[in-house]
Length: 194
Ligand SMILES: [Zn+2]
View 1 (cartoon, helix red, strand yellow):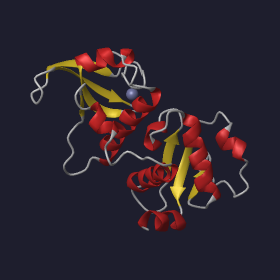
View 2: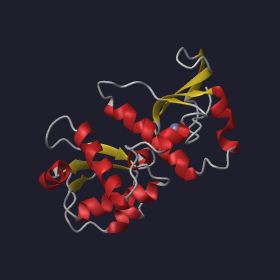
View 3: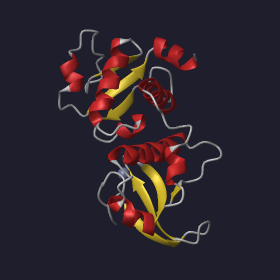
View 4: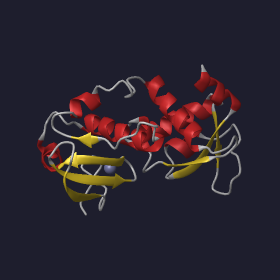
C-alpha cells in the first residue's frame, strides 16, 4: 500500500492491474480525505513532477473525488484519473469557484450526511477540508465559523452539548480541536433550498 497521490495519506493506494475501460495499469485509492478513486500508474507517478499540478489543483481533484464518493449518485462510477482527463475534472461544473459555492458544499454535506432532522454530523478538521475543496483546514475552520455566526449551523461539543452563540472564534479558528459535531439549523436548511 502506498500514499494517496493527492494528500499523501499513507497506506491508501494499491495496484489493481489493467483497468478495463482504459487498458492502463491502474491503482485504486481509498483515502479518508479524498474518497475513492482510481488513478493510472503513470499519472500517480508523475503528479509530483508536474509544475501545473499545484496544491490548489490537488485540492480540487481531492474535493471532486471526495464529493463523488459521499454523494454516491444513482449514476455513480468511481472516478478514474489520468494524464488525459485531470483538466476536465479541474474544469468540472461541480467544482466550487467562489467562497459562496464552498459554503454551499459544506451545508449540502451536512444535509446529505444527517440521516434525520436534528442529527449532528461529525466533522474532523484534519480529514474534511476536501468537503470545501480547501487547500488547508484553516479555510474549512473559517467557513464553519461564518456559518455558525450566521445561525446556519449549530455546533456541539464532545459531550453533545450545544455551544451558545457566544462561542469565541478562537475555539474554532485557532484551537487545536479537530472533531466537532455540526447540525443544520432551520435557517441553514432554508438557505440550501433557495
Ligand atoms: Zn487523499
